[in-house]
Structure formats: structure tokens, C-alpha cells
Length: 342
Image 1 (cartoon, rainbow, N blue to C red):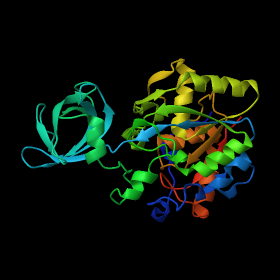
Image 2 (cartoon, helix red, strand yellow):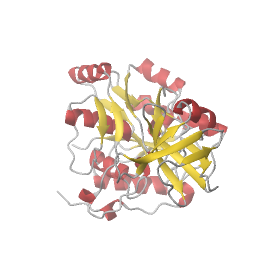
Image 3 (cartoon, rainbow, N blue to C red):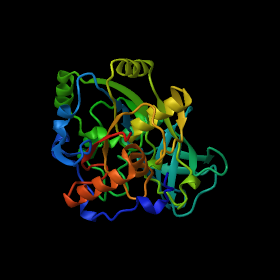
């Protein structure tokens, strides 16, 4: 097996192909069908035609929270927090963007009239994140005063459109700071058509963290430290997967976060917990047969994941096709459908 390095996952992307806004309708995005010998250009609402009755679609039902909070230090210096996780007793774990890190005990004055008291680093004294005690319930404060945590490559501030469209139609469990973007293409009409075709559905939860945008900085992939994300796989979903296997149907993951959840469960046997799973070429998939996914950043862990799933050469060919055909990339962009390589 070839030894891959970080440079193998680089590609040149014209900046105008980075989607800044979603398609006018969710299911009107383009869909690159990569399951055939030659790539086929389709529209996302054609997905039911590419699935069989009995196939099991597995979605991530996490809900994006308005996790970006703005405030200032007692000195007047500006602070931006990105809440990564809500703990007990009004405490949160957050990324902190500030010119000079304040000491523990500093009380930040936040926009909206509440306060955030810095408790220290997290999960330990060397951690990259910070623990804060808020003056009220974190979820209600974020809903009232927070902003949609749009990815760094989207250059506009969050709008009312983003509140609606940077969220799946079936989101129900708050906790993510980034959307499971492959699922953004599904609307109620498409779900109804999938039901009518006999395609089954199940859900997992993985609260997507800001680490999903973290660049890989080491040429040797084995030296990369993967970010941690919390997941849960309900008993009903485990049963649905077993039943799909029994009837010879395919398990179709909607998005890389769903893949990470299903394969973490298969590896560990744990139905919930934190995962740092890092999927690179050579990984042996145990659950997922087919994948719906968006197009990912160069040199990213997600590009490595899809290369592991469908084959490195196949993915590079599909990306070249997508760029030549002017597909829209990243969170608000288009999607593709992949089969697992034998």
C-alpha cells in the first residue's frame, strides 16, 4: 500500500468555486454521481433514482447552535468566543480569539449584557480550549445573543438566511458549531420521495466541532492529532443497520460526520462517547457502503476520509471533473455520491 503524505491531498481550487451562499432550493444543488465508471452530472433531487428500496440512509441529527459570541475584556480589548461544548453549571468550553489571553478569573463583558468568567484552559492546563462560567443558561444566551458560526471561508457575516439554511431540516439535538453539510441538500419533498421509493432512514448524533476546519500541519499523517467530537448512536439505529444487513441492503451515510460516528461505533463497540477517529487510505470500513458528501478542503482530514472510502485516484479524478465542470465547493456547495472501494 502506498504511503500517503499531506502533499498528496493538495489541489488547486479557483476561489470563485467556493460557495458563499446556498442554492436557491436545498435539493437543487448539483450531485456528482461517482458510483459509475464515468462521472455523471446530476441534480440532488435525483438521489432517489440512485438508491434501492430497502437501502438505509443514516443522517446526523445534530443542531447548529449560535455559538459565536462577542465581548470585551475589562481593558476594553475585543474578544470573540466560539463555544465548542456546554458543560454543567452554566459552564462552556470555547475557543477564544483575543489579542492577548487574559488570566484565569477575568470577567468578560459580552454583547447582550451577560458575563463570561474565564476558569482556565481545557481539558487540562495545556489544552487549546478554554473553560468559561456564564452568568445565565448557555443555550438561552447563545440563542438570544449568539451568531451562526459560519466556516472561515465564508466571507460574509451571518444573516437570517444563514440561520435557516446552515441547518438541516431534521436537526433536533443542539450542540454543533458546524453543520453536517451533506445533509443540507435534503428538504421535505425529497425526504417524501425517498420514503415513497422504500428507502429507510435512521439517525445518529455527532456534535461537529470547530476542529473539522483544523488544517493538517504535519507532512507525516501519523503525527496529526485529530480533534475530539462527541457522538451517540441510538439502539434503534443499531437495529436498523442489522436489519439492513440481513436483507442485503446498503448502509448509506449522509456526510463524513455520520461515517465517523458509524465507524467509531464499529471499532469500539461504544454507542456514545468522544471520538478522535482519523480515517486515511488503508482504513477498513465495517459499516458504510455508500456515501453522500460535499467537496472538501485541500489537505484536510475529510478529503483523506473520502479518499480512504472511494479510493485516492478515484477521488482525485472526481475532483478534477468537478472543478472542470464548475461545481460549487465546501459547506454551501454541491455534493457527490460515492461507493466504497472493494
